[in-house]
Length: 120
Image (cartoon, rainbow, N blue to C red; front, side):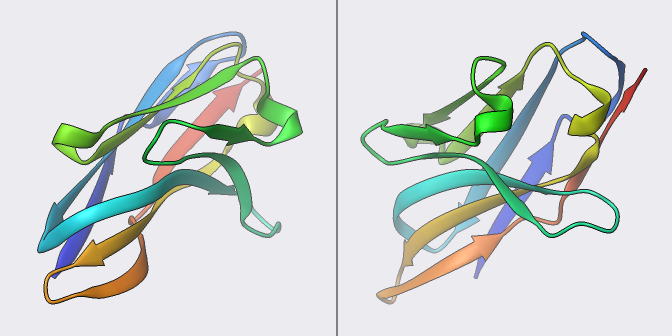
């Protein structure tokens, strides 16, 4: 069994910052990519940022220069530092991880989601 537990969401004014965390636990052999997605009301879930085990990153154009993804491989944790937040960043943010488990299997896992609300 594998769990992804997110934390750090909340309500913030435009221009403010939040830091999201997502910790993976369970029968984990290794974790390949880890990422953050978001889903706003009435919209499809979209990629925000992703990071490989080696630290290569990719960002949605809408967050480049404002958000930073990082990870701590020893803690099986991924972070999303969000600065200069805008009302359009309001969404439920989901953690995603490509995990190799024990016994050996490869699966993409999702967290339960954390609400981020940015007021204008």
